[in-house]
Image (cartoon, rainbow over all chains, first blue to last red):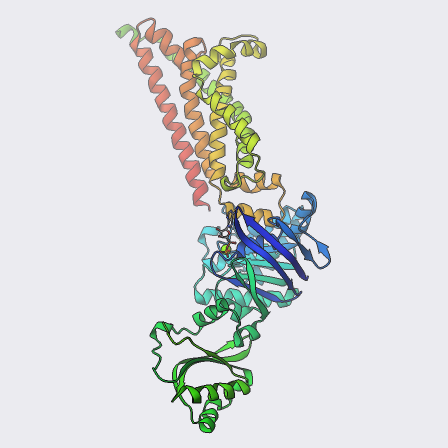
Amino acid sequence: MEIRLMNLRRNYGSLHAVDDVSLVIPSNTVYGIIGRSGAGKSTLVRLISMLEKPDSGEVYYNEKRVDNLSKEGLIEERRRIGMIFQTFNLFSSRNAEENIAYPMEICHMDKAYIHKRTEELLELVGLEGRGKAPISTLSGGQKQRVAIARALATKPSILFCDEATSALDPQTTRSILALIKEIQKKMNLTVVMITHQMEVVRDACDRVAVLDSGHIVEEGLVSDIFSSPKSDVTKEFLSSLTNVQESIVRWSKEGGHYTLRFRGNSTDEPIISSVSFSTGAVFNIRAAGVQVVNGEEMGVMMADIGPDEETARKAAAMLREKGVLVEEEKKEAR
Amino acid sequence: MMEALFDPRMLSLVADATWQTVVMVFLSTIFSMILGLPIGVLLHVTSSEEQGGIIPHPVFYNVLSRIVNILRSFPFIILMIVLMPLSRLIIGTSIGTMATVIPLSIAAAPFVARIIESALKEVDPGVVQAAKAMGSTNWQIILKVLIPEAMPSLVSGVTLTIINLIGYSAMAGAIGGGGLGDLAIRYGYQRFSPAYMVCAVVVIIVMVELIQFIGDRISARLIAKR
Ligand SMILES: Nc1ncnc2c1ncn2[C@@H]1O[C@H](COP(=O)(O)OP(=O)(O)O)[C@@H](O)[C@H]1O
Ligand SMILES: [Mg+2]
């Protein structure tokens, strides 16, 4: 199901929590929405998932407008979407399988069907035989698996995830993301993944929108955003990934300070050596790393280029020609 | 004094009075729940969104809340006297065990409403949001989410209600309501037989302890199953 947002706005008093957001979320993708805490992500996802009405603007699922539905229409449409949360939000009065059964119960589905579907879902999320477990006896990862099973019970075409992995450790996060990706393919879902972690975008999303103070500041394919980020917010998110704290990178006094981003085929070419050879530039590498973004290799390097500014500029130009994204850092590095 | 202690009628009088108290408390618990539960649920669902209300309605909430407060601040004895004509209308008499059940139920209802309201308020708003996102109707949220999720607190609340009603029913004895309070006053106070007084008080204490024990056990068992 394709989701289209047109000029969505939501204010809380004088605060513009969501401020003129327009987006197209293509069908059958994992779509990331990343932003710092307080950027308006949860508000946006509540607007898209019909939990809250926008002050102005429109939300469409395929061609159907869903932001102005009647009470009955709203309930019917909500039964066609799934949602998972950071805090799992499972019913503590119900065990695992009764949680999964809930959305089917409220649609008055047949008991025998509910039972069969619950077993199917437990298997899908890797919790066969744990149906009778009280929620408090499950680990965080298992709770989120139950929540995923519950969200998918009525075979929705959209799954909303609001910080679904933020309360989990890195290893569990990876396994939950892998599960979501697998299910997305199996069920041809449109997944809207809200997060403040760039790892989640890197490991799970096809496209991403960057949200800052209620605005979309950048949107595109994850591989494009990783190789050529435009906004400061995006760059900041990316630098959190390179695991390099700028304060421990000591820049030299001469020449310029640069962040280089390589992508795809350029990562296994000896670009630095050839640039150094033909311009006479010297590279002093401060920090570097390669990561895999959506199956594509992407390198980041922080380096001083010397011996003087003239040569550095020439080298930077040549690197750009070769498809490397070059950013000059400010002289007063923190 | 010694005579009173071995008064052969005492045993059967205490037994009768205990039975009357049990009937009064049992019936008024049921009727006060029937009256108080919907009011408590209404209070909670119409409260503000921050309080967890699913159908916020500030005007309705404030009016209902004010009425509940006024009823709660009425001294029970006065409420009883005021409601005597109502008892006469419904039961046909304004004295006796059955006639007491009506003012008792009405006196406890606002208390029950508040207890239900505060138990429902404790339910995690995230869980309610999840239920809403899955397309639950308001009735489904109330019956399948709010009440089951709040069950341990609701059981504690009912326990407290029963204990309060035991106390109220003893007071009702003072104006001809029957039961252990009536026995303590008529025999213990007016006829100077401390034995009746002591006996009535001991039975009341045992009843309260028993109810508290059972209530705690049920609540703990519900929590342990989660
Ligand atoms: N119900 C609400 N009432 C008032 N302010 C709110 C409400 N929900 C969110 N906000 C405010 O809107 C802003 C965005 O919040 P939120 O969407 O939760 O951000 P995020 O999920 O990105 O951390 C925050 O400043 C928050 O305080
Ligand atoms: Mg949030």
